[in-house]
Length: 510
Image (cartoon, rainbow, N blue to C red; front, side, top):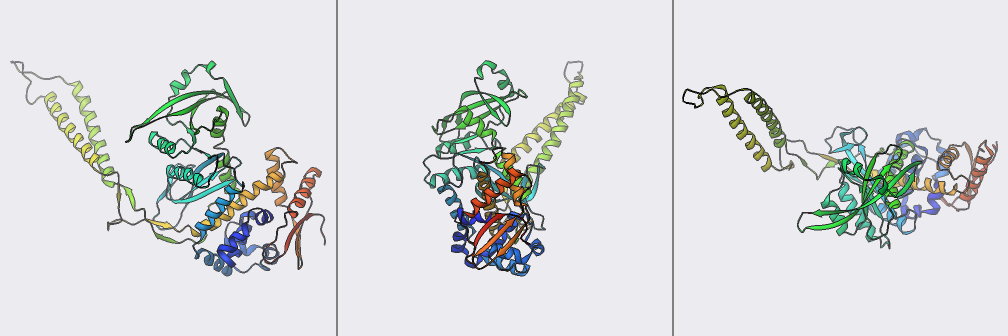
């Protein structure tokens, strides 16, 4: 991993330029991400001499020194510049592709005592204090860019920003933004089209009755994803954004029928005249859960995705909460509505009691229920009017009887996630190097992690740091292991301090 990072992505020069001697904590972070070391505190269990030689540190220091390195790098406040340069480099030199960009938000929970804005866990379906990491991946699962947002985050704003960001990179063909159907609507689609940002998303609240009513014979195209066969049908959907100024536009609507379950779903697309086929649109949407979700799940298992070094809490600029008066009125409206329902029911069971002249008696039950219903209806309407006049959210920064929200400083998290992102993308490059030997994705992943977990021996002199790995038992795996080592050695990676890295496969030199 280090050989790929150093030789292929201009990793070290970028760190040297911005952080100087701070490169040392980045090498430690790289080892943590590669070896799945869960925190800086766990670095005390590593072999300090061996690890120091590999990372160009001579010897790994004690924890106090590691924390000093970290705070010195974080105090420079240069993570934003680092990430901006790194993301732009990846796009400019083809490290990541820009055909389809898949964006999703993942919660970063906070378990401290301060009051944080609530993120939302899509796995447990509950709000929890913390932040949201908006991660964008390409078609191979490589991380294009990410941004850590306070609380739940704003996926719509993030998609719009990504469209403008892609245009700022002077790309000849803009990437198509692929996102979940939780964020749709005529107003949002109108903004994307006006910004010339192509997109693909699920159609939210599509009528199942209309989808089922479509004729089977009209599904003339097909696609197979992960062994599941889908039949496809394209339609044109006209959408009108009623906000001023009014905007009327057409979207491509692709209906997919799962031939295994016969379930039908629909996808909306505006491809900005990129001439996407039905298979491109359907495949892009179906791969949404394959690329960003797999990247996130594997990162969670193989790397400490939630680790947040150096917690620092400050006053949040977002002091907005749901109006508590609205909640009180909603409870009152519910109570009044229940009373009305009971009155309606009792009223339907009674008949008016009449005098001899045919007029209704003033004190009969039917008359009293009628008057009670009128009174409660007036009360209900007043409560609804009062609720309509209140703002949905209020700013509590000027109030004294509310605890203000805090926010986590993301400087240290940005530095750590920069390294994690680099390692993850390097992992995919290593998989590409094994592509000629193993065509099956699962086989290549298993082989790569088998190689990464090999035991080995380290030899260091004035010029070289040589790592000899024990050979894998299976002959085809050993051949791939040797070929990968030769390829990596040919990259001419040089660690800080001037020593070259070399890898080989062989028996114990002892």
